Image (spheres, helix red, strand yellow):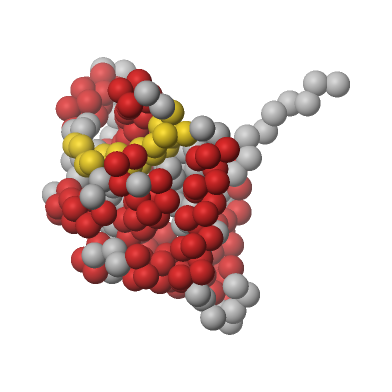
Length: 250
């Protein structure tokens, strides 16, 4: 039986110990208005104090309700929330790309989707460096991915795969929700359909499988063969994301 209280205490201690050991002051994370970032924000506010947590909304042709949901989380846990709009940055970049050739929408689709989280992560690291100077202590970047997302490679290399500390990496979506319920993350945030807020699709639409089925696969529970093969294909097709090969000089 999953014990959310015990897990929250364990994560809280882990964060406290890591910050003390490495003489760190604060954390920066993107607040998407979804459950993962909501739970991560709540955990860090609990562990290091809300005054040492900086949340960032990073709209880029995004769903407008994400910002209001992010504010619900910031208001609930009392941390600073700033907005850094990347829409013009993205548009300017795409204008430059279009000068390189006459590309079709389908040819650009994957590149356009993935550049957005890369802009976002560069921005979060910029703010971490800035706040380290402003606050007189080191700020690091927190990741917000969960075990189900990570298993099927649902993240962007150089984007949301890049962070300094991860606290939900070993928790399935249902477990993240249980943590959020214990931490009293606003229901509107905790139970809305997960999406990247960028592509116009839910995560499960893009993946073609349900998160509960990914959790069942991870836990070796019974699953129909078609779904099992879909999950295996997603995982095996993403293996290149997990380890960067380095030539071993003899």
